Image 1 (cartoon, helix red, strand yellow):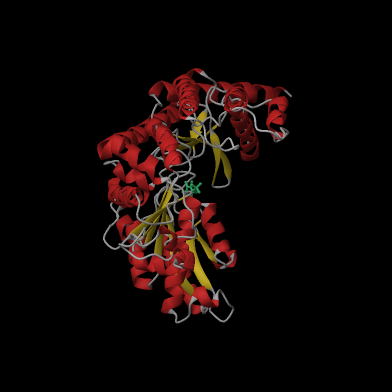
Image 2 (cartoon, rainbow, N blue to C red):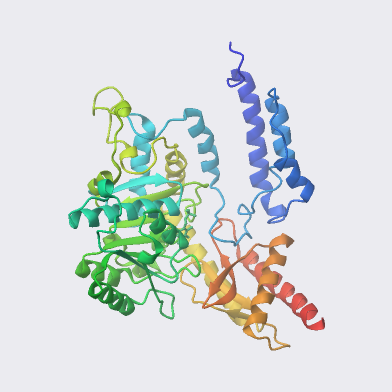
Length: 492
Ligand SMILES: *Cc1c(COP(=O)(O)O)cnc(C)c1O
């Protein structure tokens, strides 16, 4: 025995874990009966914020008590079937169990010859197959999310460009001796792509933001013109960062056309499919994804539409050898040989920025097997159908106005009172107030999008338990809140 508390005797471990499982099971089973979201009081926040670290450890039982009282009752809300905010799915229940088992094994998936590595290889290959990305020669790596996935992919894009231009970004860094590089993306592209470009040392001045068409897809003609302009000015175009499911409206860029442009212009095609790449599983949407399999790289977030608990993102690169060349730097202390000792496949740490890596793959591997391809096809298709239902209800309501086409499972709309005529600024303010009231009210949860400069309510259907009644209730809540706020607005 040691004097640390890190090891529990097996019986104590069992009892504590059973209690934790009961808490998790009750939590998951009771979600529908609780408010979607409940703001914490100042005291409840302070209780957590100001808690001192005990000098002497306290018992696990006391800690679980405290968790049950001060943490568990205040979730973000995404477990609830009427949480329509951002792109936050509920956890697949089997994934919750997988998290416990992954922690019990606690491998570092940096690399080596142990099961976690092969589980990740398999799960990532399943992801590629699910979205129709070629597996032969490609390489994928699980990362924290879409942000890290796009950063990883764009690093590979930069590396290829540098090598083709006869310099090496890894040794030379970004210097002013090289023409300034240009990345193209649409005005609807996710801001994490901007961040990635900044972190890669390209500077946001290397971003060329291309306008979108009426369906919020990148304007391919404008893109071609911008590329020509940049070349004429001596700049070096190197990458188009497309969207397969924008975060605001779910728009899918015309990937086939973009792939053509990239071939003609010798550019890297990156597809940000963090939310939407999985939408390809809906047979009614499939053709909109034509060309996605031609991309040089793809970012997918299993922690979105596949309902894997956060965090679980995936970076996929068509040229796996190039990805390795972008990141491989094997310190002496982890050099291994295949087939000897713990040597195994090339280490994951050669394909990305992280050295130690968690066993993210286990929850993905378990949940994908449980749901199966068909299960995901019906889940994703049902969400898209529910979004169409929501759009029809919006269109039918005299005081609601839809602000964007519904491509996938996102609906953008606003409340517009019928009794008074409000200008756009007043409508922005009113709808922001409606959103805030609804968020704090607990009946449903919506967030916002800015559509052509105007404030929009935005509902994303991504929960396996959401029903048509939930959709109807969202509509009711928005209209009731809108009517009440519009009445008080005009009476002051
Ligand atoms: C969520 C999202 C991201 C960012 O991914 P994280 O998992 O939050 O890091 C990027 N692009 C799109 C389209 C997204 O929906």
